Length: 56
Image (cartoon, rainbow, N blue to C red; front, side, top):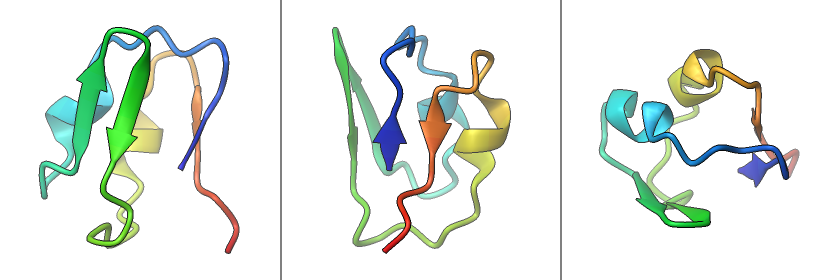
């Protein structure tokens, strides 16, 4: 997951992740990308469009 510099670390993404794979820290987000099923709900709910799926 790519977290853009304007992320506010508000926690909206963590709150909607159906697998609880996002952890919010003061100035960063921790993603468990190995367990992610690419539902992209976190990207959709971000109020400032600060998340982007990494192209692998």
